[in-house]
Image (cartoon, rainbow, N blue to C red):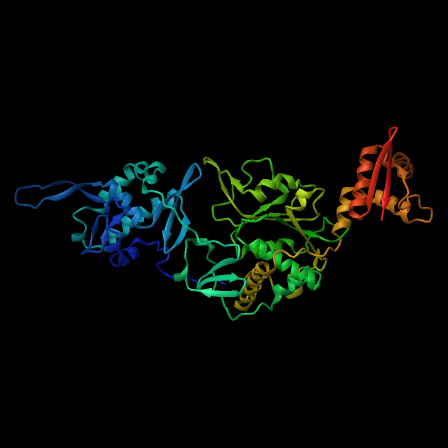
Amino acid sequence: MKTEKKSGEFPNSPAIMNKSAAKIQQNHLKVNGIAEVLVDESKNTLWFWKVAKKSKTDENEEEQVTACEIDHLGYINFLHFYGYRRWDVDDDYTFLQVRNKRIRAVPLTEIQDFVIQYINDFFANQPKNYTIGVSKKMVLSKIYQSPQTYFSKSKLSLIGSEEFEFNSDSEDAAFFYYQNGFVEVNKAGIFLKDYKSLSGYIWENQILDRIFNPKANEEGNFKKFVQNIAGKKETRFESIRTILGYGMHHYYNYKRKAINFTDSTIGVTDEGRSGKSLLGMALSKIRNTVTIGGKNFDTTNRKKYMSLNLDTQIVFLNDIKKRFNLESLYNDITDGIEILKHFKDPYTIHAKMIISSNEPFVVDSGSKKDRIIEFEFSDHYHQGYGPDDEFGQWFFGSDWSVNDWDSFDMFMLNCSHEFLLNGIIYPEELNLSARKLLNETNQEFLDFMDECINGENSIIHYGVEFVVKDLFNKFIAEYPDYSQLKVGTFTKYLRTFANHKKIEMSERRTNGIAFRTYHI
């Protein structure tokens, strides 16, 4: 659902801006306290050129302007007047436009287009006697003659930098921005407020292209979808709500964790299609999100995050490859993400990291557990049966009505509210431990251990010591395809088995012989 932005937020036409200049120029004659902008108050215009030469054909004629020149200080002040700023980021800088506490990044080419369009509009909308005798052709000729003089990065850096205090989430509150106001979510509830009460600046593209309805309720197809992926279990539904709330919380002064959306089905994990990508898309509809294809994500590439921007709030690594090394993301999760773009110095941002995978991570240490939240999607959706089959509509597309968007927004903001109230509620497992155990060993080993412990002729008894090498030889005898397996790997399997089965295991070695004992 699209709505037009109110005029005046970021007007693109200089002709429109000139109409409002008279209302504000009294407060903008001084720029950075350096000099006055060239303003003709009687004509409500701004310009940055002046007469360079006049001449006349005979003594009885008035002098005519035959050449102009650009006032470089006036030019810089002119750009500043229309909201352009330099923003220093680490050892580099970029350019912004600021209007009504809304900020957006702008490329140099946009500033160039703005100046040229301004000149065209100025001369098209002003009577000839307002132009101090200078023609449009004279001004444009100056610009076209030497564009690097006016639009180089070093030239525009003279606009000057400015410190911006952004309106950002706090430990106890989250903010969401709509066309009709901003919403503050805190422990007390959800509140729609006027932008006039906004304390700091925001990025323009944080403003969602829809109206927030404070009277809406969360009941709708999207809520049913989330209940379905939670396996229709209330405790798991409450868990995923707080996890979504954490993912939307643009605050970082606590122990940060990545979120992994993974499947729960054992044995067909490559199938996918359980709704993980759709939930990632849902987050992108309420927070600035960059989605990166996980199959081709190279953790060793310094430019792996070059698609991120200063205003990115969520990084969604979608469908990562098997055996992905979570440790390669530790610094990105906890310390911030370094962005390196072509021909620019690197800079760091903070964003929540969300991952989707067909298999769970190998979490074999406390440091890994501190950096990951794993939520298993039920098998309610699968290949051949998706939410569109169940609900008869494509989420977030033209099929969605105003009511669908209203209930979606209220559901997501309620998730934010529940996270602020309760923190992260960790989910009850479906098959997570079993899938991790299978991924870290193999099915033949698990079948072998089940027979050794639970079979009619069991040879492993709780509290009774066994020799690792003897057990290893028995496994190889029963499964000769594993003849290349090493004793050390088999021993690691024994530890992994005990860990996932929550069995205490004691170890000892005497005269080079390794012994193990499983304890309940």
